[in-house]
Image (cartoon, rainbow, N blue to C red; front, side, top):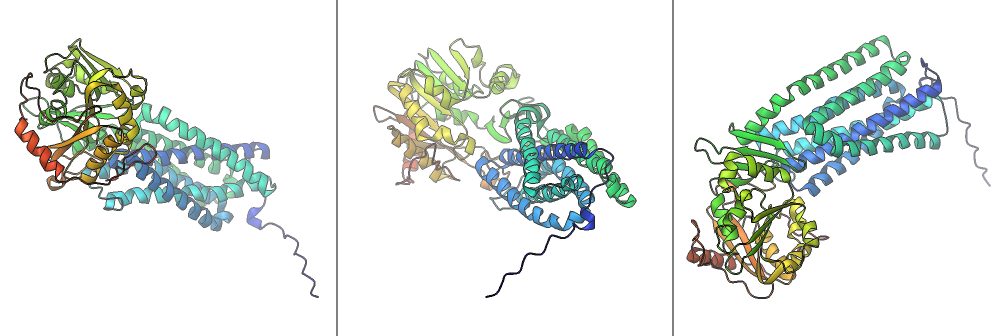
Length: 547
């Protein structure tokens, strides 16, 4: 029988792992390290959220962007943690260099991504062209640097006062997770509304650089060679100088980038609590364009054709009480009020800033016919889904769903079976619901999924399309200026609960300027020939609107 060898007694720690020579008491030094962990964790989470928010805004499909950014970043954190093991003997210098690099990369990431979007506008598919890879590259780099912090901080805190590994890990992770909580709350409630995405990232980078540099050059300066101290000091001052310069120039940069995206005719640019709103044109004979979060929502070149096609078929029947979901620009309400017999129009708009602009901007209020001055028009600032849940049953003759394309993740719940069930509940007997279902020719599967979802909610449907869309700038999750790829039409679905809807125009109303009963019927027949059958409905827990 072979006796097992007794384990060798642990040897003394390596020389580089000996007690740190601190200018303060160990307890104070330990507190300062944990405070730095707290601050760096908060900054790291802000970088992550900044990338997710900016990618969702610039590219669309927030679920996909969040998944890509966070999964790449977490993977990179693991790789960075492994790689940092080799730097433990130079923990103080290594941590200082990593924090300076992280502050620069994280602080400038938002400006770099926005610049590429503004001056190229080419984001391709999920793994498409260069700009999309830039997002992945930033996620990977920031993740590597954040992951490398943990082993080095563990080494530094153990050099102040050695303790069992479990206790050290618990202290370190407690400070890390609390810092992440603060960063996660600060981003949506403080940085984003008060400073915006670009300045918020720059301020976060500045705080990151100051925290890391102060800890290393102040607390652990005796562990550094003279050369290392000077290099880290120069590196941190350079990073702070770059971030400060960028902060000074950020307004000029944003104006130049906005002109690159929207042209030089920007009249209004404001960040509401919900989205970025930009108005261009509307003066000196130039058509007015309304952009929400970088996507064209109203074009003065073709909005009349869109809004007439959306509203007039639904108004062919009883229409004393009309509900408009979305449509804060007032253009759908303008078409509703052209019909005699309208007694009340309720506009449910999520963004009060859009309504204020529709009331006050001379060009936009002129385009919508000053509808908000009409006493029959009332506005409710609310989420359409939540508002419908409390709306009285059978209270509207017409419901008009003037909402963004269903392919955009944030809009998916407003194209769900549950949503249409709520809309069906508020329809009066004989009432009709019309839904904007996105581009028809380019996203046929999305369009027919909307139709299938309406049917699943117990509604009879009559789908139709209308061409003549301006192709100069495409709306939707993927911005493109290529006319060949821009949507050329709109798809709509007319629905009713207790009867089959009849597609036509109200003979008692002034005739639309761009529609006739004949062209409407021909377009509906053309759409019906392309029907995709067997599509499952979209629900809250199983959305089906992938582009």
